[in-house]
Length: 168
Image (tube, rainbow, N blue to C red):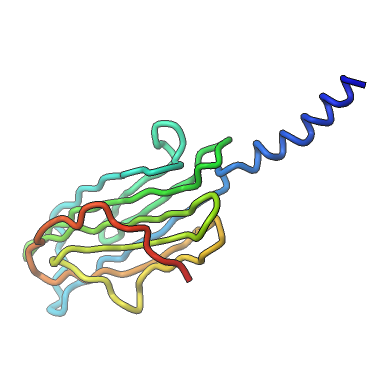
């Protein structure tokens, strides 16, 4: 009888482990578009990753990359946990006319409402109708998208740790 109970308990536990937060996913792109004069010429981009939760051991499941004028995020929750997925990508963009700091935070908690927030410094601005949005309750976001326009100004300051943001 005890052996049957142990086997039955394994059948209950295994689905719980496999359905942990490794199915929490977010991928997205921010397109950097030219300023009103048609200037874009990005001369350098540096990126960094800040993880609050998820992203696997040593944060190997989350990345912040760029290619040409695309800033890309990709994140996946940690296997076997209930920590959710909460990470921020930061990019410092430098152009011939100015510079800009872009920060994009995605927060998909294990319980509670999701949030997404993009903040930029003076050297660029979000294109209002092209701001990435996230729903309040899903856990998979394969194609978030937004646009940023360079303003030709020099970046002033650092917005610091950005808040969670909102959801739709």
